[in-house]
Image (tube, rainbow, N blue to C red; front, top):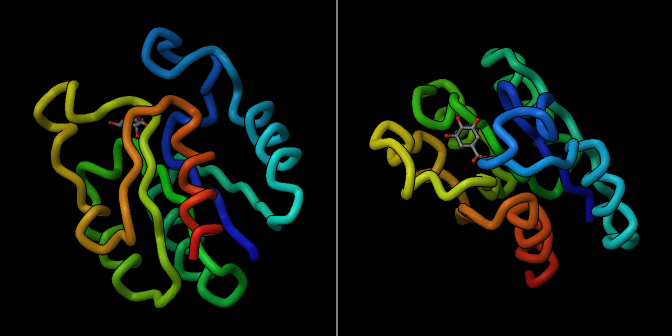
Length: 139
Ligand code: DQA
């Protein structure tokens, strides 16, 4: 099983960015924990702040991975292009969010990802990624 974890804008700052909302662990540290826990899964990780690069990474994933775990961050709420990219590929995409976007501002309640996602995991902190990996292993 080969899975790609893909993070969008500002998630490179995890650990220092709004720690009351996103915690104080960097994603690199958490990714090492995930690799250790899921030693039987080939995990890859990518991050970009650029919308078009996220689209390229989603498109390219279809040739390499069995699935994508996507936190498109702020682009979740704005990007028709990322939603279309998910519709265009035939591998499953699980949408994740660290915070509970539904308990936050109204503009975070809308997702262009969800309609084309296999499922959505929201609000469990960094554990949202762990739960997303488990969802693939249940198949
Ligand atoms: C987020 C929620 C988004 O609304 C926000 O723009 C982010 C992170 C989350 O993981 O909780 O950057 O996707």
